[in-house]
Amino acid sequence: MAQLSTHVLDAAVGRPAAGIAVTLLGPDDATVATGVTDVDGRASFGSQLPEGVYRLQFATAGYFDARGVASFYPEVVIAFHVADSVGKYHVPLLLSPFAYSTYRGS
Image (cartoon, rainbow, N blue to C red; front, top):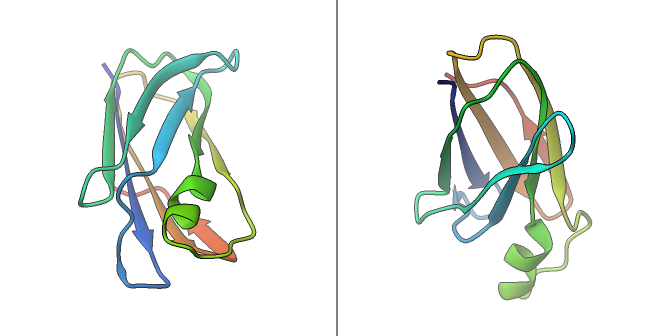
């Protein structure tokens, strides 16, 4: 079983981004799983993930709106390829109101 996790850090304030709704979409764009980042900005999805292209969709508008912060991206969608259905995948998101970045973590 592939393990998938994410970690969202709010670069503008220098701490984890808690309370962001995250949706995992499968190769057919169907919802595979949903979650919300915890107080440490983390969410995990332990699912059977066959090989294919998946998407993590982060509902960032609600996060920034709750803090009264204007932002440019109402959502962030990160597409990634699962090449090993028993592998470990970590997809971090570094977030700010007007920019974001990501990488394959460990």
